[in-house]
Amino acid sequence: MTVVFTITLGMLCAAGALTLARLLLGPSTLDRIAAADVFVILIVAGTAVYVAVYRDGSNIPLLAAVALLGFVGSATAARLAERRERHR
Image (cartoon, rainbow, N blue to C red; front, side):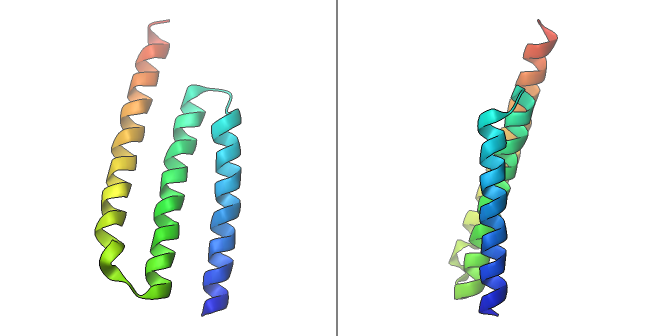
């Protein structure tokens, strides 16, 4: 099972690096907002892998809170970016 967790964390790190590149180099504001949302999801997934490896369920409320905060934040930022683009 350790091999599966190692491969999963490696894939999450690779996805995080690609997402960070999109976040920094994104051509538009909406691309950066989507990348930030994906980055939050990757952090939640990494924490879920930690919970599974160490069988420590004390971080599950943290996972729910961060996922909810990431969703609300990205939805709000996308709405503001759309409104800003419309007024130009």
